[in-house]
Length: 349
Image (cartoon, rainbow, N blue to C red):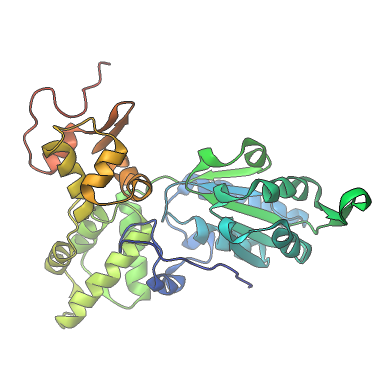
């Protein structure tokens, strides 16, 4: 199937938002059918019904909106939908669509029932977004020919297709666009049991054995995110291979995580530095994002997009109108004593 996605590298090795050249190896680990896709059970069962119904009617699947934290399988699920529908798969990202002619060229060349996947759909330009409205509803495109007084609008037909839009920031997608998606799938963090199942599946694919207790520790340290899980598994395989061990055991995982500076909650060195800075230098907070970013030597966007989401999800950090504050759980995790009146205030109810 055709694929047009160009992946871009970001800073940081193991964060789920970051794509590195090693991601090319993830293709072999990606499930290709819904039955192979582990976790997200309710969402998966609903999709199975919608896909079977559309296939039995001989129609294209309704447009699908995928939202949730990075690294949970949105792109993988888009591939699976195309496979289940037996349809062509065309893939791009919103920043790559620079001008209206880009989207016109793609849509007018789609085969019937094709799956068109747009990653980071919240970054679409308004002009392109508005062209999608008509294409999604009426399978037509408005195209202006000529300039000035002689300009006229031409309607271009588009074959019925399925648009799949993925985003980590659903709130930044325009409401008119969201309302045109007939199916919405919201990803949540995986359960520990699902992550362990993913570890066992991936270890079988890359031909390496892993002990049950080692898989448990790896699951707890991988942010409950499949992308991070698979990367850590490959690193543990490297350590075991150099040691000439027959399998990945608990000792190897513990040593490997220590070498990578990843703790039992999946926090990396800079994650801990952020929390430590808030607690030690700013008395647990509140502290503004810009001040905190300067203190740890990172850009504000990097702090807000890469580091804070997981710290908040893990219950270690709070965003308040006055700034960032460390929670009691952060003090406990870092083995620091919480002084009276510092850190996040306890809930009243």
